[in-house]
Amino acid sequence: MVDCGANYIRNTISSRDPGNVQPFEQLEFWDRFDYLNRNWYTSPWNPRNNINYTPKESLLAEKAETKIKLESTSRFFYTVPGLDDNRIVLSCQNAFVEKILSCSLLYENVLYCISNEAREPEIAWNHYWARFTRDTAEKAGCTIELTDMYWQPDLLGEKHIRVYGNQELFSFSEVSQNSACNGDENWENPRRLREHLATVVTWPMNSVKLYGSVQKRDSDMMGSVQDAVEKFFRNVLGGGASSRFHRPPSGLGLGDPAKQRIMSARLIEDEVRFWDLRPGKVSKLLKVASVFSPDTVRAEGS
Image (cartoon, rainbow, N blue to C red; front, top):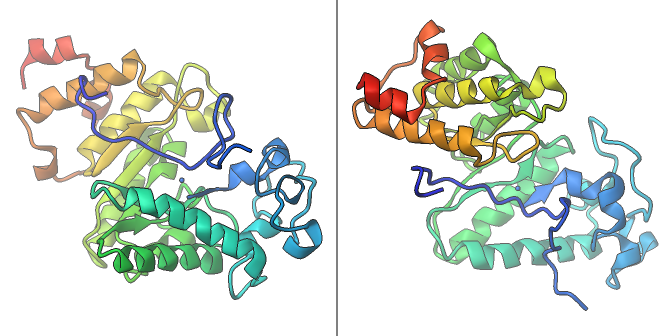
């Protein structure tokens, strides 16, 4: 990753993919997909796998929801004050996050995101964990940057606006879900957001995952390899503070097409400082730039 000029990596505290190990002793924070469907049956949080509480005490069912829903009905996301105020499970959740922070707060280059594609009752749940994280960091004498991520491709949607307006808890914008859009819409969404933020607060726009790959799923949303590299360059040229390809099969990961575009961006950066540019309306140049390889960039110069 470093060899091709990249410096940004994602760490979701997740254990649902084949080969993953649960983050518990053997004898991104909350990713709702880990607590739904088949993942719930093997989760240490499931009361049938946990000696700290029973189904009755925890209000957690042993059976999983049969499919992902727009709003989760799992009581796992209702433990905080203002909802179930479930002290038994919440005490375990607090300990889990405290353990994560005991490791991550040792480093200054960590950006924190409360949830992945949050759809649960986000105001009470997500704000609780944002405050918990900030308070823990403050007690440790650390300054952190923190945000939240919602499944809402419209970056000026109601849920995103709530994040931008809460500068006490949050300090940057996470625009990954814009990559569910392709073409001109993918460019216009963050451009409009940038204009909006300029009237509210000076925040960077980060994109920790870009959809699009050979192994397309829900192809209208995920897009192709070409869609993925176009999204990457739109982020870079559009004023994004970070841009990262999502893992396969939903994204390019760190495969050759991704490495080539990262190297191309670094070569262009030697001649043009992206952060000095001012994004305008959609340009055909974006589609041309997205197919550049490092060799092409070297041959064409700046």
